[in-house]
Image (tube, rainbow, N blue to C red; front, side, top):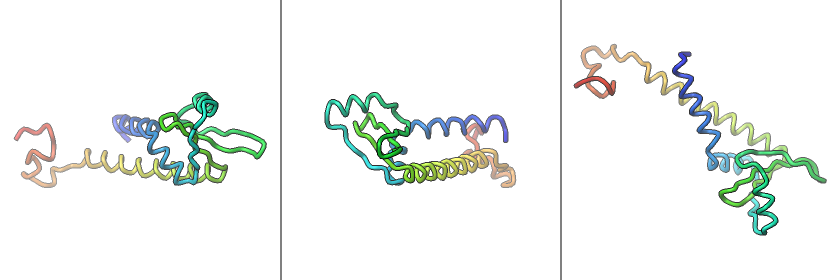
Length: 130
């Protein structure tokens, strides 16, 4: 793998981590429930939790996993089994994203000279003069 191809991969991974909407979708698909914060005490506890992170919380009933959604002012709650399903969904999505990025890099590095004199029609390489 060329060093330059690692830069888009890093950007893709960073962008994937910061997409709250995608994380909400993945958590919902795994079975997490959304509980809106309706009281001032609930809002205060919600603000105290880290945003954009799924964290374990241990209580009397055992461990649950929570995600503080500050934008929606809600808490997403799931069981350990739902958390494992979320991790599997997230891993599957990362593999898909990496395959897409590899395909894009392969297209960018493709040798279009096999098309002969028609390889520089102007649309194959953005910097080619017409």
